Length: 177
Image (cartoon, one colour):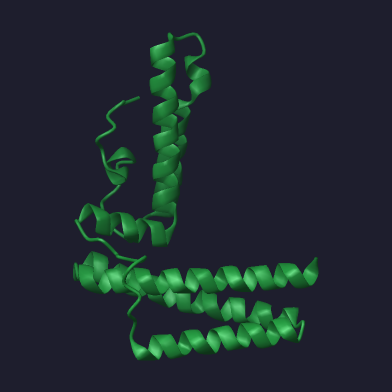
């Protein structure tokens, strides 16, 4: 087990630094690294070695969660490229995207007020389609054209859609329970 905490997440799992990632390879590399660094393997070790093992296990799990999530992976790649996505401060979006957001929110509210779980589930499926399309776009701009400005905008868009997905999930939960 390497205790090199300066490695980026991709190097840690011996994967290419790309948005398009082989999920099976990531899962396999994570299982191998997690097993090697598992604190139980260091039960008889000294306190310092136990602490390093725990820190490494935590780092491995955080790296895995980051690379497993397309949105988090895109943010991480942009961070590695020195790009701040400015998600908290830059809320400017193309007008068509903002109009679509307003329409989504109206549809969610209509379904919520109508207590229509089926409509909310249909909206959720539609939203997943939009997310998939944006993730495909992210793959192109990050891996093929290295357009970090476009990637930062797509990350901000995905964050909006993530919030919508949470709203839909909350509405479904409220109606079912």
